[in-house]
Picture 1: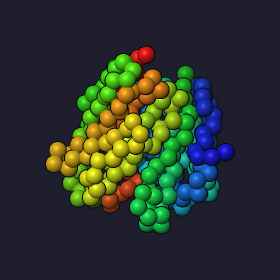
Picture 2: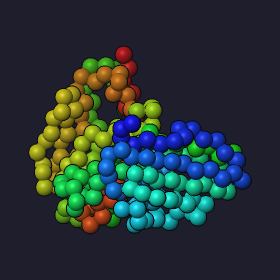
Picture 3: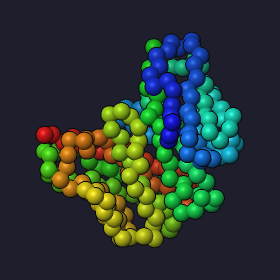
Picture 4: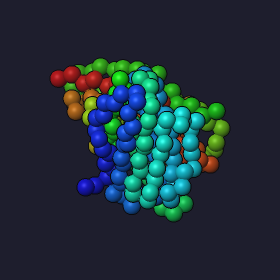
Amino acid sequence: ETGVTQTPRHLVMGMTNKKSLKCEQHLGHNAMYWYKQSAKKPLELMFVYNFKEQTENNSVPSRFSPECPNSSHLFLHLHTLQPEDSALYLCASSQDRLAGGEGADTQYFGPGTRLTVL
Amino acid sequence: AQKVTQAQTEISVVEKEDVTLDCVYETRDTTYYLFWYKQPPSGELVFLIRRNSFDEQNEISGRYSWNFQKSTSSFNFTITASQVVDSAVYFCALSESYNTDKLIFGTGTRLQVFP
């Protein structure tokens, strides 16, 4: 596979469930991102990982828990979500600009996971 | 404060028409980067272009062209001879030199091209 892949593509869960979203990048990048896209709102950056270390947490509620075991994989663990958490969750990756040079910080996105919380 | 404004919420055109999507940005940084992404119904954001603030040359790629004007803080995107496959939501985004990880997106413009 190439690019950035995300599984599952669709997920329906109850408020008491625990589930995980998975993202994998095959681009040799070392930065990975989680974004939330809700209807009629700009894309919201949730988390950033650089070389497996979390470098940004954009005031995300603790019911969202990211995990980055290596530079190619990123997870988003979900528990006790609310209906307003229903959204498209997008993963992205990029190269470190200082390491990769001009243009290396361009983010490439996966197809997203459409999450519905009942 | 950084901000990206895409004032056009939705545009409808007929195939073969030219269409321009507007993007206006705000930043205090002198070094910054501008992007356009396309989001078709499948959901994936497809990277189209990246521009740094020192390169004001207009860019053309096939039917796509971009007009970057620092004087008006605009980075507009034109599709020439639009096609049905161009139907998508288009996002303009900005990142600043001190934090290139953080992409600030506009709210997007939905383009519908009718046959």
